[in-house]
Length: 443
Image (cartoon, rainbow, N blue to C red; front, side, top):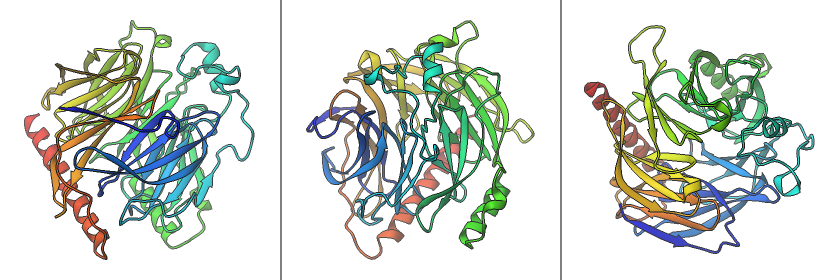
């Protein structure tokens, strides 16, 4: 990998926190995280040499913007504002990836109530800590941390609420591009009386299973997904039927909870960063900040009641401090870890058969990296390029880093753009299926 630094105006892009690559275009979206001012969302075209060119910008409508999602039609971008917990929808051009207007829909889980806790700059606590006083303060308010649409129909938005230890289920109106109503919420863990702090949710690529990582309790909660209920919700929404009959009916059911750290390690000394399911579907991976490790679990694949359950593979040191985020390259064979507090990016090889990782010896110096985004390039003839770019969002300055050697340019706009985008998505699905098949063969 070759590291290329791209430096912009640090006064414009303050504390970039999350990067989302468009599924079918050479476009990336980056949001800024600021507790006092509204976040900004930037759209950049991605050049073949890694150069980012700003093509669009929009106000996020809330503070500490921390997560971005693109819906299945590629016509809307959904954003999460952590501090005030609001969820917003911004319209996109499916042809160019640019924003076609400001926020078209906003949902506030607080129902307009003011925040109880103060921001750190105004005497509040540091939300990175895990001591009792900090947890008590940060859990006085809701704090939405992510928004993931269900993988089957794209009609239910799952939002981990770190402040209230809940996973919220919202109806997403695909036609109107809006968060229509809150359908249900449920505990993100075993409800032991201790804080869980749900941070992210990730769906298994082929099973009706979802995994929620709890930042404060250092656990992964495994949920079964009710696909039948999701289908009923999707059909009723499409027909514009009254949706009240789905209130308080959850599409998730807790079936397992596993620790992400060794039993002898104090929970108060660790917070979890990210959870993801490997493309093969064979492994679930979590980062531990404090234990400074990547925890890897094997997914039970045999038919039966334990299908989708997790069993521990091991813990692997990240060669740095506070692994806030990590990402696989497009082959699924290399893991890139962002060690935020040691200012390093470490690269590991990933064993597709055993799930173990091994340090490659490659390390990059990057100031306060807090996000890694893998960006497959799309060429003029809409063939996906095998090499991929990897971006690192840095917390302290406007500098995004790109690794990998790519070729290709952004696709031109024409009337067949949407169909070609769908073709690219189909090719990606085929590639993912091939990856899973190879993983099952190796296993």
